[in-house]
Length: 177
Length: 462
Image (tube, each protein chain N blue to C red):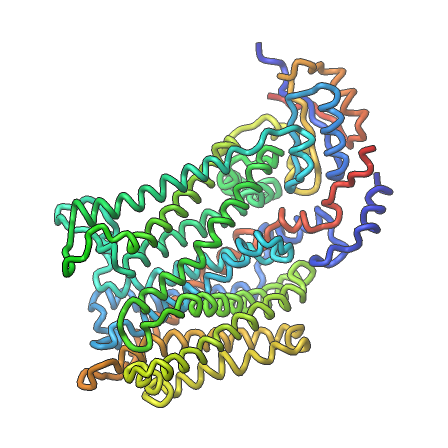
């Protein structure tokens, strides 16, 4: 069954309160949490116990694929598909392949970094419930938000709201679906 | 809470790179207001109109080129490269400073870069766009440009992967793509800011689509930071490789004056030199018109001037080494090539470039010059002219007088050479001012992280 609301959200004035609130909520046993801030806060990932980003692995795979593509493409063209005999020099002239192999490694790795980023963030996402909170527009300006989602087993509309109010929040509001 | 914040401010003091007194709100509003206002400064209209007029000149020159062919330019045999490749190398070099600021300085943890990296990256993008025009137009039949890429075709032929000219295609197109992606990834959070701040419905819709639903979640930021770091790590070797590959276009040929192993570092240093000059030429008027002196401070200008001085010295060293190598090699053709440069038909250009690139920048040793924006602006213009002349002299003088005296010919640019070159300056100005008006020219979220309030106070956690 879908819970009646998406969750409850507390608004904070500064990054310190947000990080403290996130730690407190974790300590209380809440697990389905997300924090929103106008700039990256290193301490938040640790406070929310976020798993390590999978992006480096994606980029590594992209880079290896790019390098292989670059090298094999040149090998195929210069040795098999369109061999040109220049004074009997070897067709498999690997030193001449280095530049394009390198460029394609970078290109594929960068493409996988960008698409990996979008994929891991779930973007593009045309709709998200947090935007139903009018003050959430300030999350991209100067306010810091912590949202406890209704999916959390410990979630209770009144109790969770009361808990968030006790955390030195500016304002606590419900997030509609 | 307020007390806590005050303590934080007092303890940490004002941030060294941003003027004191800024808050998250003020940073956001000041940078976003440049874009979200209905009022357009006269300066913007003037520059945009100038750029647009020159862009029309460019389109005229290109239309004529398409109709009549490359014969409207002054190129001939032996000087087949002329202005087109000079402009290509010059523009691509200018782009390099943007990547240097955004990628290399990020890896080196130079926080001061945060308020100049956005427009420097935009500069890269537009400079590469201008650069890309020239090899395309120079092809003669630009509509067949896709022949440069390996694709299955009925002609049964493929590009020659052992040629630096094909490497260049891959290097420059990779560079353009990666620069665009790096720029866009950095823009994403700021597009979300514009989406949330825009009053106009169309603006909100467009920024909303571009922001892709970014909501500044901790999960977003963690991946975003990682992506920026990885892209910076990828862009750093890329930017060094691009001008290296461009220099291979010359060094792999056996033309005297080109065939030399020190070209790659020499070209990269020259690229960064001219790029920082362009950064200063753009930053100094912009911060003055939009009142951004608190964000792009005198320290930013001074740091850029120092990079210019350092790379300028490397370039100076390269000139000396070039002459020394020619003499020390004992090779009669190499010696003749340098001698022709210094005393031949291009001697005027050579000595003018030495003045612009080596003598004039020595002024930057003085702090009084580095802290006076007007001097810096003039010095940067001088360097840009000097670097253009350097490319011109290397390309044209070597080609005009090589081994066979009977085939020597002097290159004279035609009015269409000039129109195409000045036209790309118009294209650059046009794109750049469009960017200034439509997107935040300073990275808002990265400037927020520079404020002292952005630090999390660990001791309050108890």
